[in-house]
Amino acid sequence: MQIHFRHAAAAVALLLGLAGAAQAEQKELLNVSYDVARDVFKDYNPRFITAWKAKTGETLQVKQSHGGSSKQVRAVADGLEADVVTMNQPTDVSFLADKGLVAKDWNKKFPNDASPYTSTMIFIVRKGNPKGIKDWPDLIRDGVTVTIPHPKNTGNGRNTYLAAWGWALRQPGGNDKTAAAYVGAFLRHVPAFAPAGRDATTNFIQRGQGDVLITFESEAELIAREFGHGGFDVVYPSQSLLTEFPVAVVDKVVDKHGTRKEAQAYLEYLWSKDGQENAAQNYLRPHDPEVFKKYADHFPPIKTFTVAEVFGSWEKAFTTHFKDGGSFDQIYQVK
Amino acid sequence: MTNSRKHRVLPGFGLSLGFALVYLSLLVLLPLAGLVAHGVHMSFADFWATATTPRTLASYRVTFGCALLAALVNAFFGLIVAWVLVRYDFPGKRFIDALVDLPFALPTAVAGITLTTLYANTGWVGSLLVPLGIQIAFKPAGIVVALIFIGIPFVVRTVQPVIEDIEQEIEEAAATLGATRWQTFRRVLFPALAPALLTGFTLAFSRAIGEYGSVIFIAGNMPMVSEITPLMIISKLEQYDTQGAIVLALVMLVISFVLLLAINLLQWYAANRHTQRHSERKPA
Image (cartoon, each protein chain N blue to C red):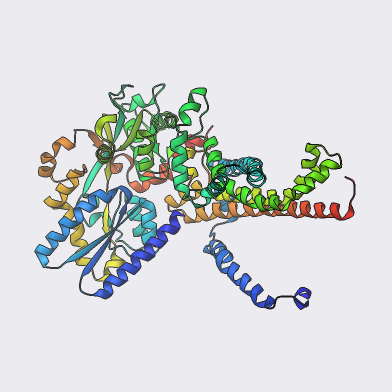
């Protein structure tokens, strides 16, 4: 049903796009993005439009489409005419590269592996931290339950899974066996997988599910805005996964629309001071050291590792862990 | 073909038959054909391997098991609800009657989220049941609850008109002939109701097999325990594995078709037997 909806949305977006093109000179970009990026780009688009107007005198319109990350790229592959994609998993952009819509070396087209900002996976616990959760080992103590979205089906869940695996791997004497053992124990403390990131949050905050919610650092602030700081505390584990938010120009579409210049500038501007400030204000870690310093109180220090460092690449991590028969399936099927 | 040569009261048989066939083809067969044609580009061994991984097998059990259970519950309680709505007058009857259709209209995600909130251990129902050790949300039981919710109108709405057609005098006649209440139900009412009840059951069952929106919120989605097959299909798509998704879709399609065919045969048999008995007036 959701998929149908996407197709309908794609069709509507297409029609809107056509109508816009027919209207004339005013150029328009469609940014197809993941679900929780709404707030970031709601703030970012006006900033870019103003800057672009000041620089070129051109009035630009930016339309947004949000939804589950993998569903969004499937819609783009099926014909949703996105000028740019801004995702939360590199595998999603690689999928488009495989389909020939995005350059094969898309992650070299922009600095920082084409991820303008980063985040990390942190713990959210009940107010006052009654179970005394401080780090990953605390999650597998008796009587502790953890709330996460489905590790196989959601970007949030995959990042959490890789964060847990990576932490275990980087312990003294850590290897694939110890990591698998830790993650297996960890998953036994997860009584239910939410269908998506936001549902995990709702289960934790509103339905009292679990002692710990694991999510993006940037999500913690959104949760606080939504539900107030009263109900929970944020805990930073000793180490966690640095999560990336890759962006790319969709070559096929911008060539057709004649919007390559604008699309490129739209994404480049994410690395400008203004763009980096926007990210920092939305609790996404900026690369710009000055901006980072300015908003240092948003970002408590935490040791992070990247997927490339620990798993080689996202593709490798994906194949080893989330493909059918991968480590996730093995944990549940060997019984 | 001989049928179409017969004289009919209403004209346009050929036209309407053609229209019905084209319409059905466009609406039902075309998407199904697309599914098959989109193609399974893999060997049978791969197909079989994809269709029978332990996680997938468990998901068939969960999907069809929970759907069956929910449809049985709905058949039983739906019959009672329909009976009450037809045979008794009470204040608020119209209101209750309208309420029955609500699960038809409600977006399934809303149903799922509401039920989850209700049955989670902080919810109204959950907070009463969990201390007793009865956990419904995030367990297979939750799936059944969601499927009962979305399936109930199918049974009520198919059985209701049939009950309306059974005249109360028939029950009275049975009573004057010395039938006990149970006998009246068992031998007089139930045979008349059975075909409709079976239809309602089938509708509720097939609806439950395909249900996704309401289930995923309350299911818990644990591999081997509470993952439904539609979720496995979504999971394949999330892995960009369209082929695998098609395999599971085809398997579901085949199992559903076989089950529905079996139920339809059963229904045909039940209806035949019922009319036969009536015409032959054989003492059973």
